[in-house]
Image (cartoon, rainbow, N blue to C red; front, side, top):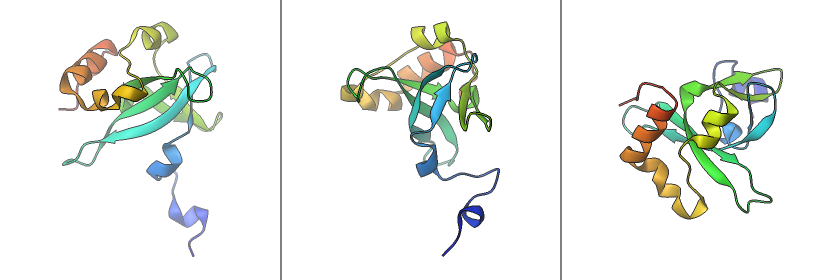
Length: 122
């Protein structure tokens, strides 16, 4: 059986370990956690992280699909630091549990990438 060190390197991580990882604002405040990763089917690259923000015990959560490039792993907090302001996040496109397919919609993706000033992956 492989130990933890042989299963991962400093440059690689299993997607199952990313899900649930805390996301922090620039100022260090915890703002949510990664719910899932969006992976390009044909190219295989991670394009977005769906981040769960707000709510209590899973009720009232809003999901933000964020371009992967806006998140940077920070070993000091053992989580991802978001390279946008809190105002940018709050005013950004969102969806809820009842509309999870929204993250797959190209029009929604256009709004997300435009809002965060990131060049689209497509």
